[in-house]
Amino acid sequence: MTYPFAFMTNVYTIPENRGEGIGGQLITKVNAWSKEQNNEFIIVWPSETSIDFYKRYGYHHCNESMEF
Image (cartoon, rainbow, N blue to C red; front, top):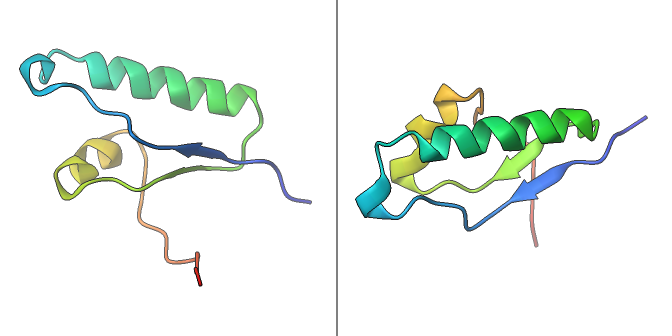
């Protein structure tokens, strides 16, 4: 049995507000909501500069998808 998943895109903190914890608060809420929805996973395509941010919140690289 598979569960639904979430797709998150085009989410960022504007540069002048970075470092204030806004992104961390947002991703914490998104992760909690996704668990409440019984999503199997959340897909994100991070920019090079946001990879470490997502890793701090439990995200990891996945090599399973393919596209045509």
